[in-house]
Image 1 (spheres, helix red, strand yellow):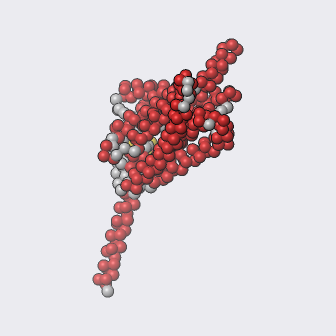
Image 2 (cartoon, one colour):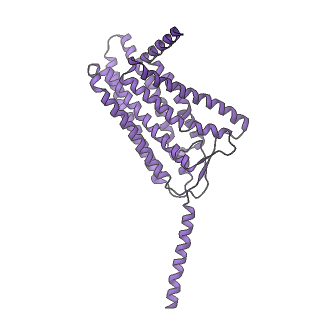
Image 3 (cartoon, one colour):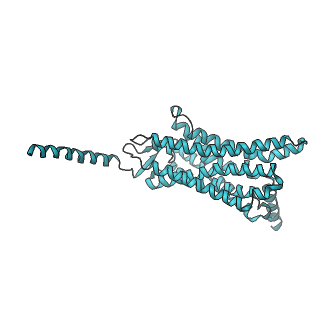
Length: 332
């Protein structure tokens, strides 16, 4: 009997020891260290100034569009409503990253807290997904305006616009929350160094000491669903637009009609192209260093150009801005 009891104690002690090891391994990091572009201080200061200028222009340009759309009665249209929301999204998801990145350029320790990492990942994912969907909504708006002008007010009514925007933000938030919850439930028992300048999903998965197959599969599936859904709406809309434009007899009218879609197509190509490269590439060809360069484009650079290549190429926006400037100049 005594031998049996001793034998029972040995497994219990081993189980306690193994449990303690697992608890230590599964302890979540309190902070993460971010790997910026370069550690050389003079060059870091130069990059700080460059990105500060870019971020300032992004905020000023997009805030200007939002104010202009809201104060000008001639811009109270569905397209301009989508444009102002696009500008808000550009400000929001670019603000989730550059402020911390700018601070790290000048800091001796380039770190981010656990909760800061969670919030950064959530807000960036939420607004990036929402922008992907709002570009599809804008393609539908162009389809309704060009292919069904007589039914435009019914197809893109104020109620439809509000419902679209609500669905865009809701979908972006839900999908981002799923990614964040699954990512931060993983055990991070090794290094806390993220080989990126912000808390993105793929670099964090690389730090986990457990199998991340489910996370990678879900990342591919959800991002693929968002991209595919948006692409289908955009593709069908522009096929219908192309057929309608080709049916117009006047070459001048064809050119004028299709020119209203040119800036939207540029924005779609830039945004969707970089996201496809970032999240839907094969894991064999995955490179974090390459992703850093691409991530700079869609998190910092493209939001700055959107007011130029999209909003200010819009005839109604340009005319409203010109009238506002002329009014202010006359007042002075």
